[in-house]
Length: 347
Image 1 (tube, helix red, strand yellow):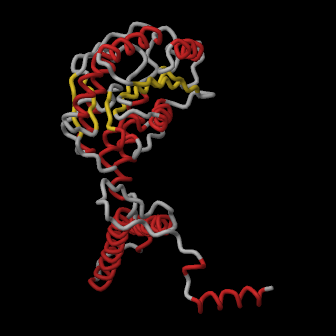
Image 2 (cartoon, rainbow, N blue to C red; image 1 turned 180 degrees about the vertical axis):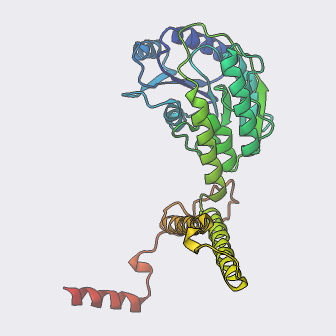
Image 3 (tube, one colour; image 1 turned 180 degrees about the horizontal axis):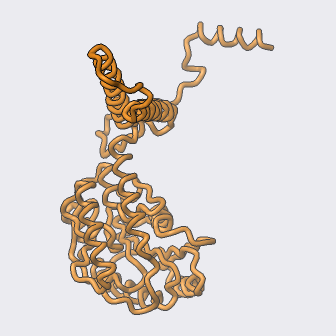
């Protein structure tokens, strides 16, 4: 199958028939084999009824309905799990993304060799209250992620090579950072295509300004996971050690100043009367806690099943296969005898 189109939606019943017809026309004109996956994120306006009607008329239109509203990221992740096409296209259901962009996105993946192509809505039909925060958000995302060629991380219109969506997990509100997730999974050929942004025809936007605050928090989470996800001691241990050392030096300075004033005959205060003494102790306590946080993080990672999970791109045909888990039959005879003897003693 050439293309899977994944469309997450929430209360978009009015726009679905027009969107489905538009996608069908583009696919037929370009002779693509395709499927369209409508992921209904707990809609309450009859969207699921419309999807079932559309699916009944065209078996290539498929629907999945959540029992309640979970969010765009879970909807995308579910679509990625079910998609069967060689190229996965994601788009919003509000008709602000144009299906006419699909052929060029497909070409950039299959012929230009990109792993992921993200749309860029250079000219937007949004109010300033949305466009200005979006520009600041994208500038920060470019800086933190290191993907400097993307102008619009949050554009819903994207194209992926199939391997990309099968190796990433989109959860929480991480749909804003799918290019960053792909980069962390080793897919570095990330491109951008300028796409048309159409004014909303039906309904109202489902996202508020709180998404910008949550977006920055999610970006910080992704950065930390990519940098210190399997080595938390490198962050917490270093920061804790520096804070403890700073507090320890400060305590010595406070004590030394008191001793100097005592032997010099100058007036002095008790160490416990100095605010710097308590600031020093606080710094030492926080440093110890941060160090222990890193230590506990290392213990958790040590017992994690994914601690040695690495994304493998390709292998030669004669590459050694993974060893199967060790069974009792693989143990030396002496160990087997000892194990059996221990079992009998226990009985």
